[in-house]
Length: 318
Image 1: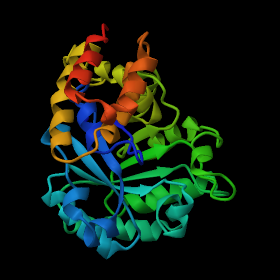
Image 2: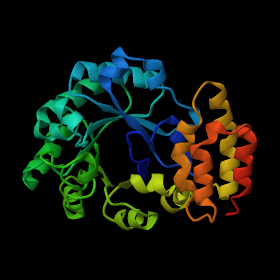
Image 3: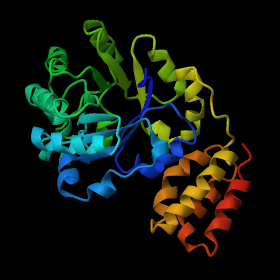
């Protein structure tokens, strides 16, 4: 199954540079873009927003919005650009999301979500999936199951469930990732109620072992912040989750393969420090990690950036 291991869409993190880097660690993990509002694709700089490297596949795009026509138009563009999947964000608890009527607040409007899914699917051939929470504010368990039941009837067969409620009253987005308690049992129950659906677990997956332990009851797992803070663990994903051969690269070999990409993007006008910020967690466990991170954070000030990058590679011995 293509979703056995996924990396979560994360704002300000899973941009195309981060995704390219992750592909140096795993060929099989399913990757997602940051959430992009459908309006931005339809009315904004579509070429830049949808840009990615072919190496990033398999790749899905996560869209935010609640207007079926706009979501459909954005999805058509995404398919034309070669994305493998449209994922609707029905889980983000941000106040901006609440004000814009998309994200987790839409769990209170299952028929609206179902209408969006149905309309999108009439105009594209790639799958439409939904990422949501186990509820919002005072929603009961039966409301959660009802939401899934209604949306599945629109043609959605894959649900990515963040196993926490979204508490939109009084908690920040960061607090909503940590304070509401995890409830894996309700996700297991969901799979039992709807065995034909593909159910992916998200939330609290810190290690690959955490993920493997949940594959007995579910179809896949999605790792979020831990994939960013400790990305090198993803180098074992292909063998552990997909029975494929790992790339078996050392940290030094991975970074050496990343250097040409960094230099090319810099030549194209991108600020290199906005790319290297994504790989700070990669140096976890290295005795020189602090010094390496400091150098990368200020790399734009180096006289010979290419030489500096190769010096960093030489400091990676594992």
